[in-house]
Image (cartoon, rainbow, N blue to C red; front, side, top):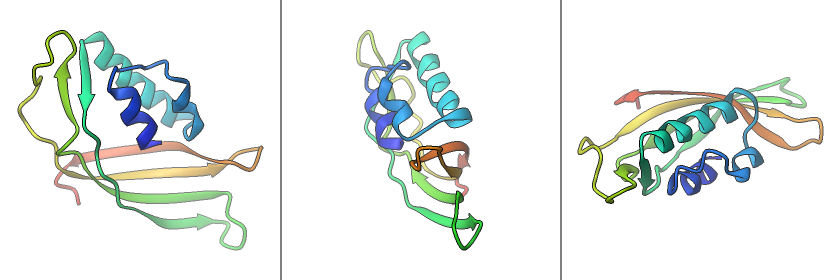
Length: 124
């Protein structure tokens, strides 16, 4: 999901069909809203955050259909630039932040992120 988001972020393509490959529901809405906001404000993202996700819980334990994930993401190399002139839009670097996510098995047996919450820099 985050790789699809990073690719779409290069042009702030909030309508990218690839966003739905690994996200649905609230997660997909949050991704598209974020990209739309950047598009509206004339921003693009260069670089990609790193991720270090771990499964926190699985329900039910014997045959999971829902998994909760904790991710310590580092966004120091994913920076916003102005699309019109390529200038850095914000000189404040990102950092390490906790991302909690929920991944659920879909009707077709695929797994998709259904929700996530990104916390402040310094939370991991």
